[in-house]
Image 1 (cartoon, rainbow, N blue to C red):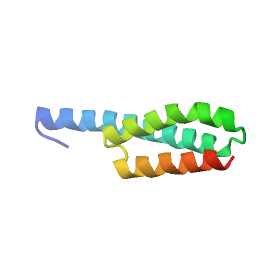
Image 2: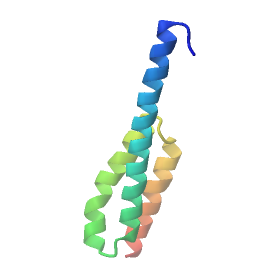
Image 3: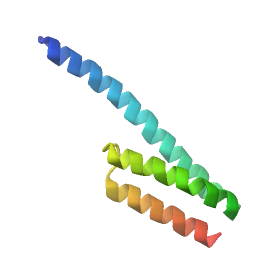
Image 4: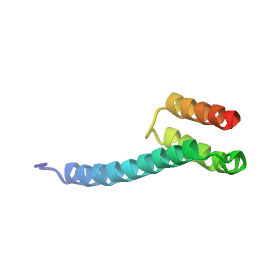
Length: 83
């Protein structure tokens, strides 16, 4: 166990951040999955900006890599165009 107050606080804050990152990452994955299963082009087009913003925010906060966010957004746009 950590001996310093600052180390104990770091352990607590790391756990909090880990749980928040895990929740946000899982939410984004579920949103992407939901968008890929849609068959209505209009509905998918309306949903894309919010999911793209979610991915951009995750990339900005280093939850996912910026290139991964770009690849996901590109793939989603291609999937929507095929509808």
